[in-house]
Length: 457
Image (cartoon, rainbow, N blue to C red; front, side, top):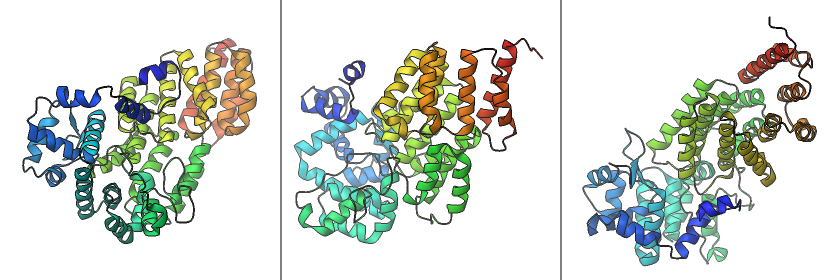
């Protein structure tokens, strides 16, 4: 069903497709029960059902949910071939089920025994509270329909949850609002706190990027492609952001993106790895921060010309974030277009970029004008120079000066190979903060222009 939707270029959300697949009785649950779990004894199958209420699980949490004292051995066995469960990394005690299997197990549990599902969510809420993960604790309290516990979480950890919910909450199924919500202000406040909403507005406190409000000015600078302004704001606002549990992850994400944009790829990898380590240490694979860590690693792999590594990161991102943070999905598609460009499949790359622009999702990219610059490059590559010129006339004004100059030079050289584009480009070499990638592009373009005029020296 996903393949048919993609091939017909229909817009689709993977989560909705999977829900439709389950609703239409397409056999996924039966397949999981009989073919995937059939080799396990009944008591272990029940334990796996019970543990499906959480996104990821460690031995202690598995024991708490299932009562099995052999949790470490069970999880090691499930993760041994990587087919049913996966250890988050070689040193982590945390595992996660394959998303498709977990979805089927959870659907069977909630439809077949909803009272038990609520009890397991309440048990998980208590465990997360004891282990100082209140955002996950609140999510499970709400899923358990435990009003008093949910309100207690907000009273005790409200500030921490409000800072964490938009950014680091796991992308598991969100609890649905209860019918009594309108007549229960305290409970409504608990739902609003979990969803990252203020008490006075129905709009999220963060943008579609799901980043702390205090970091939004830095993020907006990155969206514009102004990495110097972003770096200055990051230094100036570090103290103002406070020292919440998510302060470190916010800093790591911003530093990783800034380093990647300025060409310091080693630093970008270091920050992304540190962010990923923090995520895995807390069993939060599938969180938004985990997605940004994966995305930065994919972007670095693309820029280093290692497509296999890039594809691996992008595939992992797609699986772990299939419920979709829009900015991450757009970035994933954009990196896929860059990979096609590197492989000289310019038509496929152009199709992807134009779909991003047509849907308006290019505005979610970092920087937000990247897709429009790439579109012009691809139109030049396939010889559609008139279209490239027409699009660039419309798009150039929104692009920072140095990038606009480089793209204009590319278009000039494509239309008039002997044009003195070096006059346009040379001033960029004296700019103090020009990114490494721009320094390289300017020199390559000047060399190309010299070559076309016979100036071998």
